[in-house]
Structures are given as C-alpha cells and as structure tokens.
Length: 121
Image 1 (cartoon, rainbow, N blue to C red):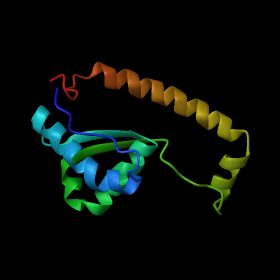
Image 2: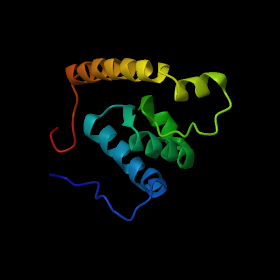
Image 3: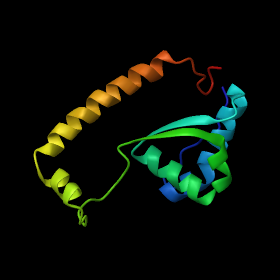
Image 4: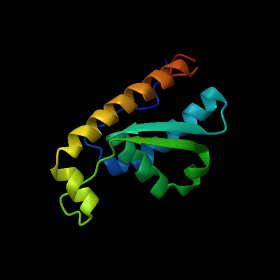
C-alpha cells in the first residue's frame, strides 16, 4: 500500500492546505486518470481545501466541484439580521435538522457512485 500522507501533529491547517492537499489531489488524479476531482470537505476538510486554493491557484483548474459541509465559521460578530436570527433562535434547530437530512442524502448518493480510494484501486 502506498502512503502519500503522513499526518503531523505539529502541522497547522495552513501547512496542510499549502503543502499536503496539492499532492493528494495529484495522487487522486493519477490513480483515477480523471481530469478533475470532486472534493467533499467537512469542517477541517473545508478549511484545508480553501487554503490550498488560495495559495495554489493553479489547482482551481483541477477541481470540478467542492462541497463544503459545516465549514468553520464564526458568527459572533455578524451584523446580518438573518445571521443573527439563525444564530440565536429556534430556527437554528430546524436548519440543523435540514442539514442532517441533506447530509444523509449526500452520503447515500456518494456511496452509490463508483470511486477509487487510495490503496484500493
């Protein structure tokens, strides 16, 4: 099995996005012989993707779609009435429930698609 990623506990999000994500994308493209990748990121997976695209803009052309699930965000300083309402009211519970239903559908769809995973292709 090839190991192309060794997690370093002292690495920052910035370092992972700058230096680790580009070879991961290249690895997937090489293994699948695809022209572009689809990236589904959750929380840190969103952060490292956005960092990669910022510091390595040439990788934008290697990505077909990016689906951001629960990207890290801070709403404490929001001035938008909608943002403030969502952060402080019961509507937030409804939105979380919708998110979970959407996430379940996305996972079901993703698992129904043929794919190649690292070390299994």
